Image 1 (cartoon, rainbow over the protein chains, first blue to last red):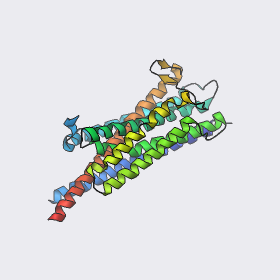
Image 2: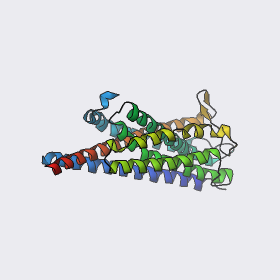
Image 3: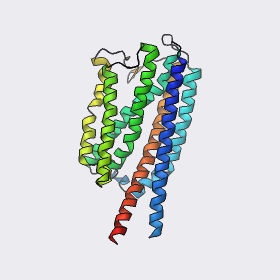
Image 4: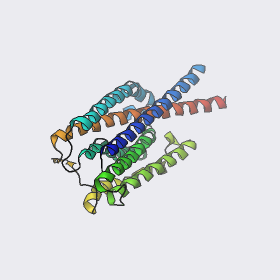
Length: 43
Length: 241
């Protein structure tokens, strides 16, 4: 059984999951912090 | 540790540290994966499929490390009532679950060319799958207590659930010794490594890189949860007039 398709699938899956988690964490922090700052400035 | 109980003081450190952790993690991951794929020699028995090791081991390490972090946060919440412990617990849960799922899926992909099967109900794989379900349970409990507005979004029940789930950690670790398993035994221990040096060093890079990256994600999540708490507190104050 050729190993490289399995190796590529495993690395590809890890890359996608890592990228998606990074984007989700960054976006949620950015949006929440921007909204909190906006509310603070309004007072 | 109580020096960081003030969210403002915590944020003063977390905000500048986050990009350093993130980008140093990314650099180490890229270097480790490159070395693991193209520089490390092929295994004499498994051939090139062993290269999945360089992502599978960090995923297992962070899946288990994540739950260890949840356990420490739960103890700090229950014993010392540390205000950031509940926030840390919630922040760790999702990336921990992602890495547990990655450990299971990369292990399954590695198992097909090596063992001839995608899955086997043996001690290591079953206990790891149980940990994924424990993570999902923790996330659901934490979300429901956050909806009820409990401290930091993690109730005492959720923290106790994390402590009970920690009983699964030694089961995962010793499963390959306690039961017959297709999964190999530990290759790296306190006494040294059974892996050749030429294959081992890229693993050091990926483990360290994913650990830095994981820390950055947890810090980002903690910042998001603290900001959401600030928003809720502010809206509650505004509604009271």
